[in-house]
Amino acid sequence: MVTIVRVPARLSLRTAKILLLVAPAGLVLSMVAGACFLGIDGRVQPLFHALRLVFGLTCLALLIDGRTQSTNVPERFDPLFHERERAERDRAFRNSHKLIIWTVFALCALVTAALRLGWWLPDVRGAIDITIGLAFVAMGLPAIILVRRDRSNFDED
Amino acid sequence: MDMIINPPLRLKLRTARLLTLVVLAAMPIGYLGGAIWPDQDGGAWLPFAVLRLIGLFAAVFLFVDVRNQLANASDAMLDERERAERDSAYRSSHYVIVGALFLAFLYTIPANLLGWWFPDRDGAIDLLSAFGITSLAMPGIILAWRERAEQE
Image (cartoon, rainbow over all chains, first blue to last red; front, top):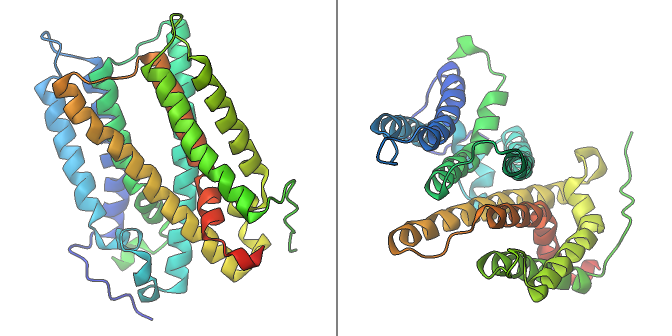
């Protein structure tokens, strides 16, 4: 059966793969850097606000891309997808779950070590910013995994 | 070669569901309560510490139960129906986890403006750990609630 979910956009595989690596990493890094290098008044510098906006909007655009639609639609639309598409999507969800859990425990370990060893830790506002960045990435993680695993030939695009 | 699931524990459906409720209630109350109302030393009050322990033990029982073993089993160990149920549980689990993260984020907006409570660093680590452990058990919890009683 052919997938007939209507998609707002469809990027080439190469573009999607590159952007799905750069945008989430950039979003989290700009959140961390913004919390780390505060301005003189103790607020986030405008440069980091701009970077967060650019990377955040790029992430949003990627999440409405056609390649990631199978991770966004409810289960009742499952019959619209190939069995192979469904299997790949489900595997992406399983791996995404594992990655999120490992990230949470790694963060716990990192913060505990930082508290004991006196490493840098963000203030409350910075911690919230970083959490928001991670939550956005977590939301799109199945889509990121799905596209990164896509083995279609680049030339076909 | 097909592999067989040999779980260390096979809880009754009713027991498993009861334990899931214990985890979902004891973990947030124990960890959140301990973070909001710390004792003089900055630790958790005894009732909250007891709740945390109860939640953790319940989570351990769920981890070794057959439902969680099903959730962690490889494709070769499951038939088509079991695979579909497991995959659906992981999808739902993903939505629950991300939803919880965004709810926490939504709380921070008025909390920041109105000066509501925020955890200190030790409290944040505790809350993050509780979130991680509950999320780890989430696919098994969903499977327990989706299982039909007659399968028992």
